[in-house]
Image: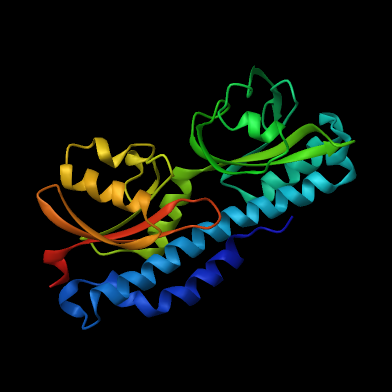
Amino acid sequence: MIKKDFFLGAILSMVLVPFLAFAQPAAETAHSPDKDAQSLLSAFASYTDLRIRSVQQSLEILASTTEGQSGKWEKMKGLLGGYQKSDGGLIVWFVRPDGTYYTVDKGLMDVRLSDRSYFPDLMAGKQITGALVVSKSTGQRSAVIAIPIMEGGKVAGAIGASLFLDQLAEQIGSILDLRADAAFFSLAPNGLTTLHRKTDRHFLDPRELGSESLKKAANEMLAGTSGEVTYEFDNTTKKALYRTSPLTGWKFVITFSEHGAK
């Protein structure tokens, strides 16, 4: 497998050009904040979806190989290990229908995945894209991407990856280099934060942070497809532009203070 970082970085750099001014102090730019934020939102959403889709495509290839189709860990572990080493920022695993599973780093685990909320769908033959978990093998907050392996019309197991969200958010933040009054975050359909400029807010529900206007804005974003909202948080009026990912259903959001945009 070929490492995806260069490809993703090249794609993002092409999208970044229109809003580079948004990363500078407000006094130094004549750009419309809304227009720049829309470009930033497009870049944030596109990069994240490309990253998740690239993992999904790699797992599809792995699951289609002779080694993957065998359903035998000993036959596939070398192939999965090669992919994990080449991509980084994730762990790769194989799970059996009974929930027992193996990871590239630790082999057979002494816990099962059968208690995961996504597990019934996976064992019913559905692909999993972006399910939120705290990894049992690493303890890291992760998004699960998994591909079922079919044999004779039945699921014989699945190959999956747990993508580390803290690391992904740090990469996005480093590339975007936002000015102080701007931020990015994304929400899963259940309202939990999946990515945030401040990674300690991952898996928090913004509706439970004590701001009624933020709660209202979050509910509006979760119910809508795209648009803009305003809310009060940290004694500041925030404006947020949002859009929905067709891949994961996540709501991607760019916020900035109205005071900083003047």
